[in-house]
Image (cartoon, rainbow, N blue to C red):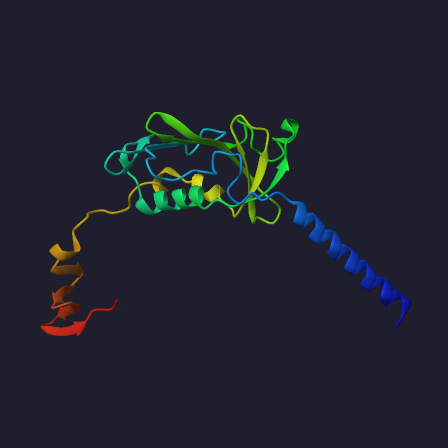
Length: 217
């Protein structure tokens, strides 16, 4: 075996050992031990405020019987957008602490001036307050920092998009809401063509020109 190949194998083995040693001493941060996220649950959350550095896309969401936008407009909120928001908060996975130096917070865009501020309330109690910064170079992790803390965490995934939404993406898109059991027939007309969707037993069918056909799913 050539000496150069032997040295290459040795280098690879040494690098592998160093990698696993470093991984072994990294703190276990899956739920952000010592942070407000550690024991956080979505139960009882009544208000969420999202404030951006430049003031664009600022949103306040509040829950009475249902989730609604209360700022900058009053409108019923989109259930799926709310669900994704809570999933991000409750399933958040902490990868590592990238910095505890307050002078470096601007690099990760997690200062009050550069980060997207998130406040989560249960009644009048503020239970989470943190800043969402930029993603890392791989776009696989996002930097966050809790208010009042110098620790900057890298958390798994690109969670920025969950909180950085235009106002119309927080709004309920439904034009009209009709209980499924109350709907028996739907007529659609365009130009000279009319199609009637009719519920027959448990199957939706198309009635057109007095003929029945199974409605496409």
